[in-house]
Length: 116
Ligand SMILES: [Zn+2]
Image (cartoon, rainbow, N blue to C red; front, top):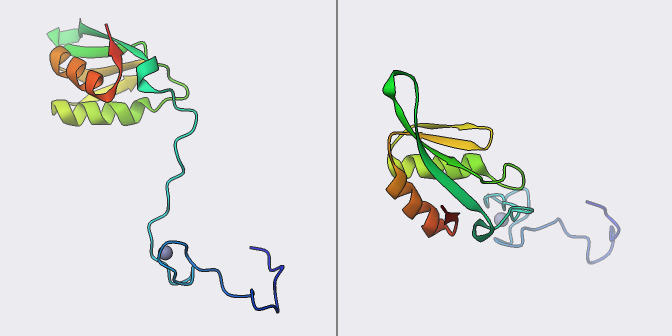
């Protein structure tokens, strides 16, 4: 903070825009900067598939979403909690344990993603 106005009537301690308290006393939560450079879901197409892993384990796999300018980790955690299942992010592949094709297709559609 520069003090260009030091000594003038404008030389007041900085106050918070939201609670109008001096910044030192402010306890407002920090404002998250708006997400920048994130590709809108409508411009992304997710490919849903079911794959078998060792010991016959079934996983639902979502591929095709860009890994850059995107928050796949955030999306995966939403999908995992909605399915009540564990999962991992492996490159551009989001794996969710179990067969959740229908649920995932519905969730992705609700979030605005195209699926195929
Ligand atoms: Zn505040």
